[in-house]
Image 1 (cartoon, rainbow, N blue to C red):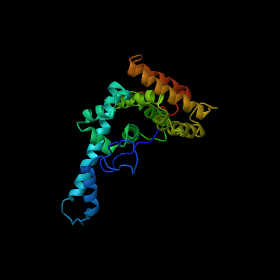
Image 2 (image 1 turned 90 degrees about the vertical axis):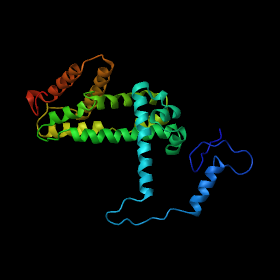
Image 3 (image 1 turned 30 degrees about the vertical axis):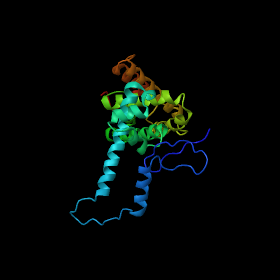
Image 4 (image 1 turned 135 degrees about the horizontal axis):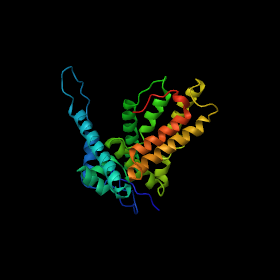
Length: 261
């Protein structure tokens, strides 16, 4: 199958080339825009103290805002209808932009889904860091905070979990997306392993723990319980009680226990 190229200006997909040189622009308008850019490139203007940003900076800010709106539209569609519904046209309608605008910022649907996933990871990590209390003297409470990020304790976490569930479902039938969604490394399990190993070496855990296996079990339990709460199969209280029970076996006698919350 012949690979289709896209317009160098607006990103619109081009028809496969026949004989002769392949097309690089979708229209005479885009060709003219490219010509004007070459003939009259923007000249950087130094900014003095107290002066407003030049129009180019404002344009870049507007472009970043539009890109963010498009990605947030992907999140909303994924959470409410699943990624199968996130066509370029549906995303454009949800974001309130044209299909061409979506194509301008994202070369194709795969790029759109990947960029939306990466930004969601970054946002979740930033928000989680602001919520998790790091107290090396209380590893059990630290683990509880980490595991809480996989439970729908509020609207933000519930929406994020729904989006991740949509990506997981899509990754089962989309190998290219699966390579991004399911990377070879396991940063969360590594984090939990490190917390448990430090607590074990300090004599705060039950003796003889295989901290890597325990980390795998804790993460899998939190993810599964969070999904059950989303589906209404368990209450949030039941999910947290199950995780607290497991933490109690890892930290017997209340060692490192920050108490119920």
